[in-house]
Figure 1 (cartoon, helix red, strand yellow):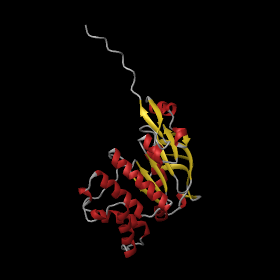
Figure 2: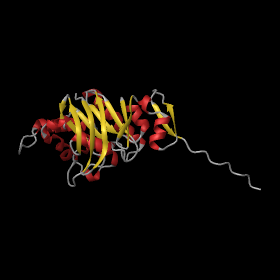
Figure 3: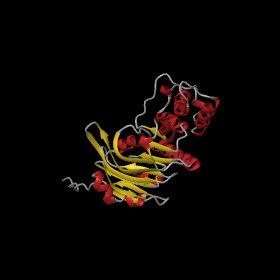
Figure 4: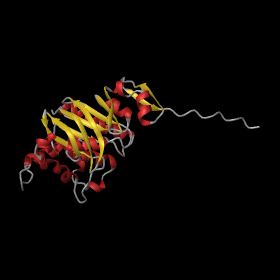
Length: 266
């Protein structure tokens, strides 16, 4: 298990900051979903935690400053899946998932039998064993998303950073992937920080939400506290109503603007 805490984190690229003074604490084994409109800075925030974006402030992993950790040690603690991952051409599923073992290998070392066992176990857990020898380019969208998750899980990191893991998936495949992430999280005690566009799914799976707009945290807390019609409507410039799903989680539903009544034809 890995806890994470952000203290006044600002992040951006070159001379432009897109995340401003974000502070949040995520207990070990819990799931935080970062939500917000397009361009709010969600992906940049995850990149800052992963050490891939310039930032100020403190990122603490189990109470230790992440910027004081070596690259290899940081990679052992954090598994990061970008929104649009690079899938190298010519690799099979097994080859790709084996890349997740890189932080555990010494210089010039090759994968051991133990590394291959880890990969085989991950492929089995994600129902990818039958696709182990398939080239990545031949996979469907849902299969590719599972392969990306498999590579991250092969790192055996205590913290997973997942940037829009359901991108390009239909509702059935999105639900299946999120259920899988949640099952693995509960089984392994892994901490999850993800960005999600679908607010209803975010409310169903995450323990805690952070709503970001223009790079700043404008609301945080349990899903029912953050997913209100007022907050969503104000920060997404949308008309919505919030219902209660059968499991008690908030379901955000768009409301169409009233149209003028049509005049009867004469």
